[in-house]
Length: 358
Image (cartoon, rainbow, N blue to C red; front, side, top):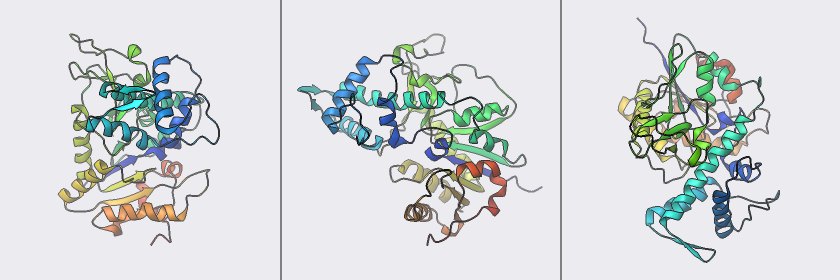
């Protein structure tokens, strides 16, 4: 009997962008331009002080030419201060470690709020490329998703196809089971995951983006004897990622096991940035331990937007080819995520290849 082929599909920010999610460098501007549906006076007050002191940006007067820093720059400064146990003087007041940590949590909550607002405002009936991809999964092959996104686009697509996402960790509350399971490992957390810092259990909030709610409105721990306040599991995009959470460690372990079995890996909307050393190590560890390089397909072109510059494609292709032991197995395709979603993994051998990247 022939061995069943295994596909692993990485979903980066570009994949979510295809279905309406803002990219990371848009998130700060998006948040401060959102209508204040729920007052967040304390949070917004702290963020105003922070951006004024650190970047000379008045968040109450955002203009077209206002240049925001990236999330990596914002969170990197805060996390390094926490790591070095240092403080700041902001508007004549010393921000101690507690206040710096609180500001960091506000910035992470900001990410969750924007994603929940932008994706929640999508019109019903709009074509969803994640749903198209799930519909085009080959039935005679095993497919696993590894998502680097917090949104619920792929979660919902799997459930809409009458499947149940298998996340690689246990939840304190019951999740409705549908049809067969599809492995989905969200390495940086999820908008519907809430961890209890008291008992350590994990609560799944279903279609509700619980991580975007203010602390006092978040769902309580589902463990019967606990019922303590919960906190989001969202790992921000910085060099200083902390992966000590027990549940995320389980998720990463399952992702590694999937990569050990993968015949083909598809990277969708993911440029393999320098900040993602944890991802690089995960891929390298799986490749070395299995003793072979799988087929690698990069799906990173844009649809309905200006063509990505050739120089950017060369840099991106170079990062992937340097990472893997057998660069000849790395294929940089001309496909966008939208196009890949309509073809699925089974047509990989016929994917058109980008030329002129050497």
